[in-house]
Image 1: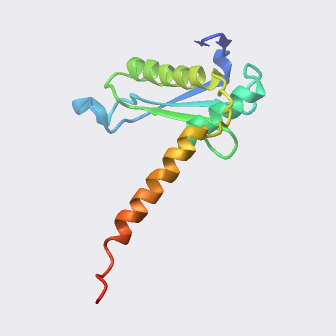
Image 2: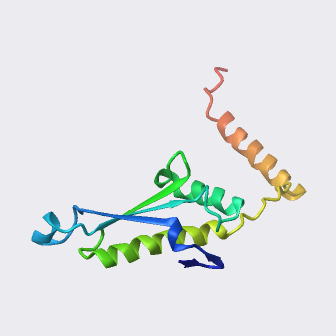
Length: 137
């Protein structure tokens, strides 16, 4: 399987077929059309360590404690389409995991923005001060 510049060996992907709860009519009770795809990201020799870590973080609830990504596909009523759907979703996750996060460079507020903020604070304070009770002269 190919995802961007990564090439994942087919032996690293484990697919099991189970009965789906979605579309399929009478076939839904007798044909195992849903696909459960498992990919061990932590132990994969095809993935660099940083990509594997990002992939596990991106997968969220689809990742197990051991770093195995589990994708369950039952959107379609045919097994080959569900299998393709599961592989496409894994490929999309892998593509996103390959993107490096851009480091954030903290910036400081400009002098003019500081002055504007302070002027607005004093203006609001003046408005709120007028809301007080009138003096009893």
